[in-house]
Every structure is written in C-alpha cells, then in structure tokens.
Length: 88
Image 1 (cartoon, rainbow, N blue to C red):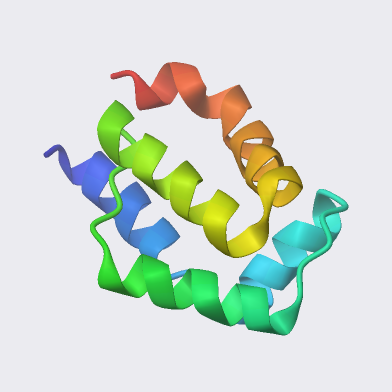
Image 2 (image 1 turned 90 degrees about the vertical axis):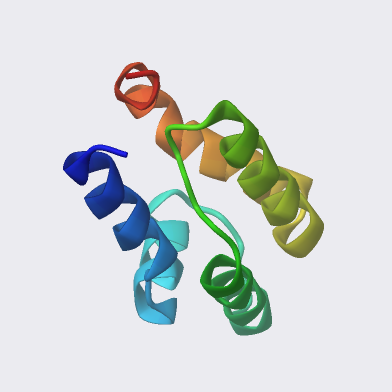
C-alpha cells in the first residue's frame, strides 16, 4: 500500500468521537453519542482501506448496520467527491 493511502486510511480509522460528531453536524446527519461510540469501536477493530472497493463496501455496510441507512448514505455522500482519488 502506498504511504499516502496508509496515511488516509489511518486517519479515518483513528477519527475521534468529537470529530465524527462534528462531521455529522456539518453534513446535517443525526448521530447519537452511542452510535458514534459504536462506529468508532468498529473502525478500531477492523481494517479500513478506502482504496479497496471490497473494504469500502464493508465500511458502508457496517455504517448502515450501526448508524442507519440515511446516515450510511450520508457517509457515502461525504466520500463521493473524493472517489476519483480512491480508485488510484
């Protein structure tokens, strides 16, 4: 994996609750503290690789299960502008 990919994946994997809650507010997504805790816990226990379609799908499925369909769709929407980078 390229160093830049590692850095980006690590940043996603180590997001703090405060940062996640802020991003949720920024994108007008309803997110409870419990959901944030559960999602951060999932991120910490799983390999995150935004550059792998399989791992990205796994991430979105976990988000849907933990956060809900609307919130998972918002996560995908947040990443959509960067998709051309993720297909490197």
